[in-house]
Length: 260
Ligand SMILES: Nc1ncnc2c1ncn2[C@@H]1O[C@H](COP(=O)(O)OP(=O)(O)OP(=O)(O)O)[C@@H](O)[C@H]1O
Ligand SMILES: [Mg+2]
Image 1 (tube, rainbow, N blue to C red):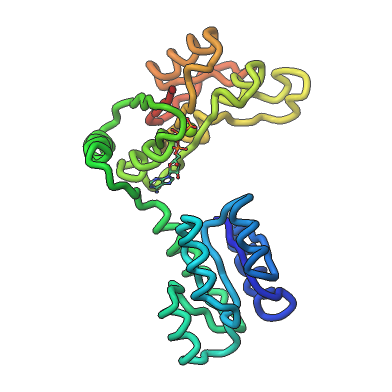
Image 2: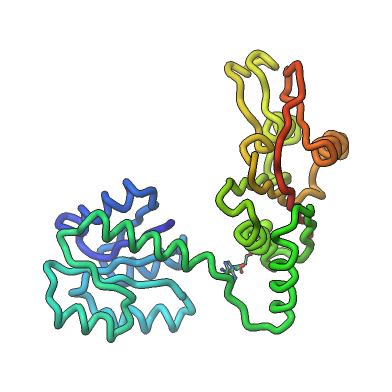
């Protein structure tokens, strides 16, 4: 969750920021709307909290003009009902009275995170793909998702996981293209202490991390061909060998892979 706070942090907004950080949000800060827009352009955010004293209507207008669609929450000292109502009319999703209540901040972060999981689309062909994804999601079938860059392969993989019986278990993503070849095996299957120089402790791999849940092998076609053979065994037998391990480890995973 990336949270952008617009306003002076020396006061109560600072306290709101610390609460959000404690709840796992990555917080960036801007003192002016212009600075906030700059941060959105450069880094993006999932949620904006803005001091109600700023011109909320103008800010939301600027977000629309630049096609940013993210929730805006207004924050102000005390529960000034009039000002809060105005902020909502101007397009804010919520009004948080300051000093901030930890539970309220947590609830807002939670609600935004859940909203973000809704799949947004208009195209009728996408509807068919979503229907197919939802249809296969509850099965245990392995899935290969292909498509050009940016077409939403990862978004679909997450959708399948969410709609599966494994939704409450981990969703673990491995970008096969981003991990150097010599590290990939230990990354996927883990290693025992002393398996190689630098293996100072046992480490479980992504397969074990995803136990009970879904493992996304992103850009699987980039994986070294020799490793693909080991992968075949893991997929067929649902069994892996940690590097330096003496016996195989059973894993219960659903596999989704992508390729472009
Ligand atoms: N909830 C959502 N609903 C609809 N579209 C979304 C949602 N979340 C993200 N997107 C859009 O999905 C696209 C990115 O999708 P994703 O990262 O899954 O693509 P990809 O096919 O994995 O691309 P690449 O091959 O570059 O990794 C972006 O355009 C993003 O704006
Ligand atoms: Mg991707």
